[in-house]
Amino acid sequence: MKKLIVILIALTCSQSLAGTGITVKRVKGAAEVRRGVSEEWVRVKAGIALGPENTIKTARNASLTILAEGRKLNVPELTVLDVGDLREMSQEELLLKLAMADVRVAPPRDESGETVIPNTTIVHGKNMAVPQITASNQKDFRDMQVRGTKLLYDYGFYPTCILKAKQTMLYYPELKSRFEFRCMIANALEKMKLKGEAIGEYLSLTSIKLSPSEREKVEDNIRRLEQH
Image (cartoon, rainbow, N blue to C red):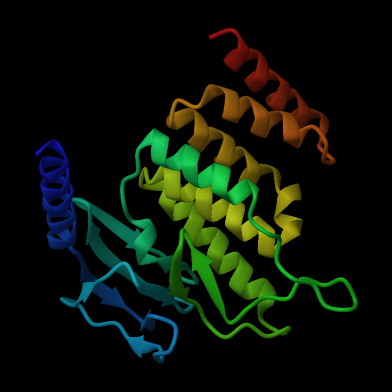
């Protein structure tokens, strides 16, 4: 009987979440959406509903406004955002995802040692579509992913921000040396009340090249967290 009740509650919660929906409220300029891993990019129109399998991207001078989890999000130009990341997650679920990420195999490399970027990416266990990646646009796509990750932080989706940031660093190892990007991860961990993990993130920053002011900031944050 108890097992049946648990199943019914889970189904109810799933239906509730599915019914919440994410809606495009406004579109300016060239914004596109892709569904799954096999469909083409199509222009976004105001009023359409988006699902967790969608990925959206905005061109230069483009933007769009979406309503997700009761929040109105403004997606700026040159941003890639996986709609499945616009969701809440408990501290326990985040810790489980982080533990799984720790044992995940790093991206494959070619004979020259360069990271091989796949045409699609795996996001939190689901196939999320991304644009075709070529050598000529890897940097641009990386920066679009970074903007999407920062957008998650700015709107309070801290767990998926952390997971997306760590995933993006797997494909673009140079991001490990970006001070502000790494601090964003540590700050998001703090927001999730994961003090030990936040300290660990700051400690890992001490192994990269930092300016005197950056190193001081890291050490101040470590001391602050250790004292509370």
